[in-house]
Amino acid sequence: MSIILSTLNARYTHASLGLRYLLANMGDLRGKTQLVEFVIGTKTTEIVEQLLAKHPKIIGFGVYIWNVEETERVVAMLKRVAPQIKIILGGPEVSYESAEQSIVQLADYLITGWGEVTLPQLCKQILNGPQPLMKTHVGVQPPLNDLALPYSLYTDEDIAHRTLYVEASRGCPFKCEFCLSALDKTAWPFDLDVFLAEMETLYQRGARLFKFVDRTFNLNIKSSLKIMQFFLDKIAAYPDDPVFAHFEVVPDHLPEALKAGISQFPAGALQFEIGIQSFNPEVQALVSRKQNNEKAADNISWLIEHSHAHLHVDLIAGLPGEDMASFGRGFDQLYALRPHEIQFGILKRLRGTPIIRHTSDFGMVYDPYPPYTILANGLIDFANMQRLVRFSRYWDLVANSGRFANTLPVLLGDAPFARFMAFSDWLYANTDATHRIALDRLAKMVGEWLVLHSLSELAAAELIASDYAGKSKRGKSGATPQRQAMHLPA
Image 1 (cartoon, rainbow, N blue to C red):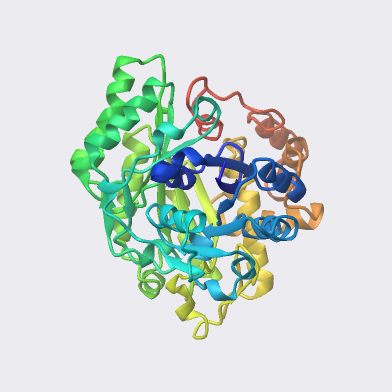
Image 2 (spheres, helix red, strand yellow):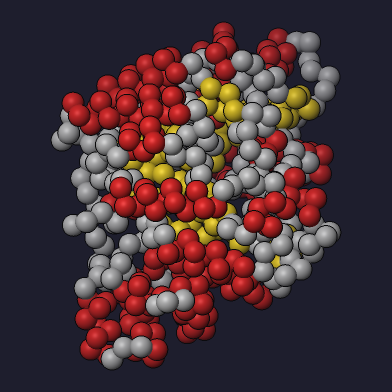
């Protein structure tokens, strides 16, 4: 193979959509190009050995916030043992603030932004001459209809064992300053009939789990309805062969036509990721986030009460202008809506995002190493930010896991944020751990906390026993992801 396209995925179950797009658009170089994926945590020597065994002349790496440090080690080793191989970098992590990055300094070439057109052009120059004069190449953004779609490059192994990422559109019209999509001018749709034909082919090959990476699935309601109808038709025709679709939706845009479609999905078939991020209007204005909080809350309530969709709702701690009290009020407001999961994230300064303009005025201090997490700001000092980080981890273990469904309301009482923060502080003080806490031990600690603060030993034991703590709840059969299956009724 003359060309290898590679990346380090966060998990084996993540199949790289970006690399498949690049491979699909290599043109007459496609037959000379191979996709090779790894998983973070793999030994650098093993990755390098496997790459070199294919005798490539060019290796292109997809670089992301979660793999940049490990990818840099791979590139550095390749440059030591096989300096004749040309290394091309691309991806969001190296597309901005590139000059200061050591991984970029190690590589031969860099493509910023879109790569489907520019990568094959660059590879032809490297292979056939004349040799490229510039190290950095700004990716050409073609009309979406000019791109070859990548879905045939999902293998049977991918379909059987991995999440299939798909996109009906690219870009985002919103300008939230903590998000790389703030740099997009708008959202661009793919030809919907062509896209759905590709989804049909995937379905016929056995795909049942589709994760849409569109930033704003419900922006164009006509398109949203047509995509949902595709899945509803499959469910109606094959009710015993479940299909699952995941969408990211704008929380304050849920017209009646969309509600009507959503209400037709059975349990376990539909998941929405909903970004609230903050309920504080002043904070929203600071980060250029336009959101009608009342409509967003009403829509989440409607989804909980009138649909079977599984709701995964996001909040971000550490935004400029938001102190602990404000974040706590927003958390309590969101918890009162009873989403199935609250994804409690900590602000990260993604390279290139406009959030950097607030650094001085709001005392924003970020970790200089990936994933560039906020360490402190003018309203939340380092110690309290670390408390929030631990809260996030423990919330995932106790609340989002679904294993303490009966216990959680008692644990939180009428002050969810304050009471879980107190529990989080106590748990850390008594375990000195945020990871690798065995479920049996975690259940025991939850029980001890309840005895210390509200229940008798017998009542606490009975409450814990009524939950799934101490054993894994069996996931539903079929396409439903295990994490969602934990929240479905037995």
